[in-house]
Length: 267
Ligand SMILES: Nc1ncnc2c1ncn2[C@@H]1O[C@H](COP(=O)(O)OP(=O)(O)OP(=O)(O)O)[C@@H](O)[C@H]1O
Ligand SMILES: [Mg+2]
Image 1 (cartoon, rainbow, N blue to C red):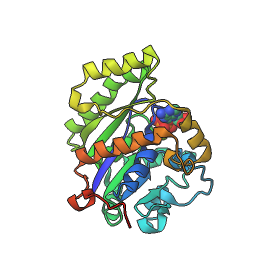
Image 2 (cartoon, rainbow, N blue to C red; image 1 turned 60 degrees about the horizontal axis):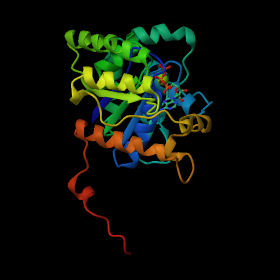
Image 3 (cartoon, protein in one colour; image 1 turned 180 degrees about the vertical axis):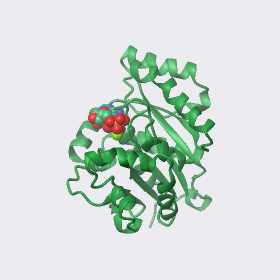
């Protein structure tokens, strides 16, 4: 099993949106994905409009419940979710300090390997204890950068934080930067993307960019990934197929040859 953490120094850049839609796209493409929410705000459950508070990750850590009992099943066999669960605000600092060395997440990694090919971890913004813990059990990290100046300005901070953690012995590798909320017709938004393309080594910036699109607001309102926003989902949902394909290649999760064979049309 591979593990991929989605992180950024700045908040609101699209981490949870990318996590959820990428997890869905990868699962539809045949990769078994477990999306774990490490944001104390319960971002993944909020994105799905889920109100019930189950034990989730908080219960997994505090009560040592078996992972399989805590997973939320989805309409896709290959996609399961571990929400943050029932965590009181005042318990967040304790959770952060418990997670900061990553040891409690080692059990998550071991048990996740029974149900998933990829553990995808959504984190809160910044590089506090929770994100450090997530990075310590991740093979790779993906950095969403919103196509706006402030997000670009904080990228160095993000890269320094990751370099610092690697300097402390963490093995996590930078899988790449994905540009989010790009407004193709807005010169200021495009300028940010262009600066990123010119500043970063080309292999570190993913070819797929995520456009800013109203459909995200609708999907968020409906509490679903874009691909489930109706029988004919909005065209923008295909960017997550492209992103999934790009990341599968980088993660070594490409389709096996038999999956790549043509599928006969005629019955
Ligand atoms: N491509 C997009 N187009 C339009 N709106 C988007 C897009 N991506 C994300 N959003 C919206 O931007 C807001 C922030 O997105 P999201 O919650 O995914 O960011 P985040 O990085 O997870 O934030 P946090 O740091 O608080 O965890 C949300 O309201 C989301 O619906
Ligand atoms: Mg989030």
